[in-house]
Length: 131
Image 1 (cartoon, one colour):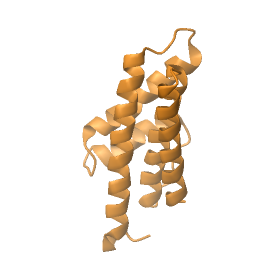
Image 2 (cartoon, rainbow, N blue to C red):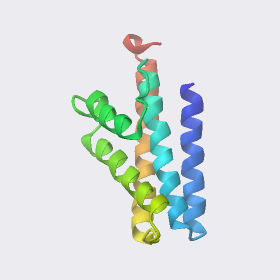
Image 3 (cartoon, rainbow, N blue to C red):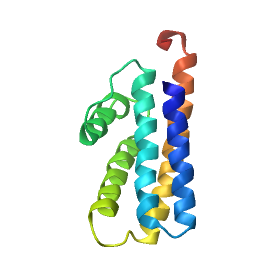
Image 4 (cartoon, rainbow, N blue to C red):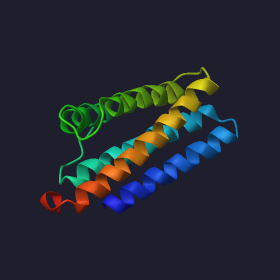
């Protein structure tokens, strides 16, 4: 399950980069959020925790479980919230997503996904966390 979630995360990241390159900032913003969403879900799964049922629940619980006392930096909790807000803006307003916002989202998503992949790998190799 974890490998599949990380694969979906990387796939969404690749789609976001492609959409950005084609000038579709709304689609890029959407896929950036889902890239971090799947990565966050993989983090829950790597610890044997159930994924919260709502987007806001996932964001709050990610911060509580993995940011408050580590192992990830607090900026990553903020990234989830910011990208979810940008996704909502892109999906539910008639205003176009600004290119600079989509570009920032893409960089933030790349960093988030890489960090979570490394943390999941580290956690899975640690004897106390073997699932």
